[in-house]
Image (cartoon, rainbow over all chains, first blue to last red; front, top):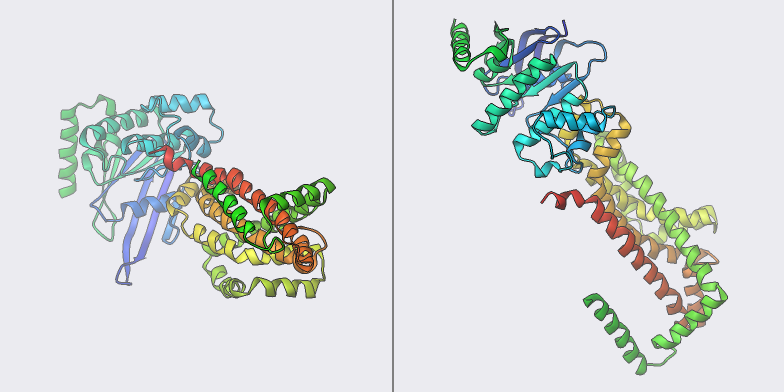
Length: 234
Length: 245
């Protein structure tokens, strides 16, 4: 087991100053090399869950188990690149041991060839998110965390990035946890889908869809989606 | 070009005003330049300019480094801010002269007292600006650094300093002009060299030529520091903003 998340409860203080429960009795595990997707309605606590796994939120009851010295690579919804450094520098700072050649190769594999010396503000959101992805991969993470990786991209770009991510997850075998509101996206990217209930969120269903993604046609995907939605309704 | 013309007009105006006044009260540029040359030839001018510059550099470095560290702490830590804020308010409102006189009384007419007194005058301003900068640090980048486990040194160098740099550049600019003026007062009150000491001498001799012969080169040096060091630094630290446009 690479990742074992067992959250008994996570409370937060709402706008009207009352404590509210965001997550309750939530259990989630991923084996090495598995890709998991957490799917749920907007505002159900998905990002909160991801922040807990990332170690950014420690105010909860329960435990998160990662391998010792496990390295985390994370792609936030906003790219969070350092605006005063070039794309290549941004990656180098996060991954000081990566060689310049490795960085160049990584950028090229993500469709960022020629953008190494650009500043983040010169990039569109789609490219900036790829740069953030390059940064997360450059540290050779044990666990890759993706927070709504396709959100706010236009449809064509989203599809392109989705395919890129699917290929990447398949080829690199990096253990990945994706948070998304979009079920087809989860099906396209993950082996295992955790469907969350509305607040307080718990895992309502786990769908195992470990079909090799590269073998999947659009029809097969649609079929998977229908099955998944049917399972969700039960 | 316009700056240069404006500067020439200033000297012309000075010359014109000198024609209509008592030369003991307002000597023209010529006589002042003569005295300047004389002082330069004897070496006096350079010795005193150097002494003053060294004091400016020492007290400025002391105030900026201490002030940035304290300001950063107060901007990031609410308890530190609450504890230190009253001290800051007192220091901000303490007249420079009071600090200088007290420093001389308590520590004697020493170099340490002089530099310490100047630094203490500049300190609260540096603290306020650095605190403002620290408060505006982007928490999103902080979280990124936490997830990627950037070591402290890398965090300071790549994340904190670039965000503080525009604030520190502003503090440098206002600080430098404040510090050198206070250094002259400190020298006038209790040192036996430096531009301030010479101005005191000129005052006792009622020698306006000598006064200007020391004041003007010093203003010129500080102007040069501002133009060739501080401004390029300011441009460099904010380059990434305009580069991207």
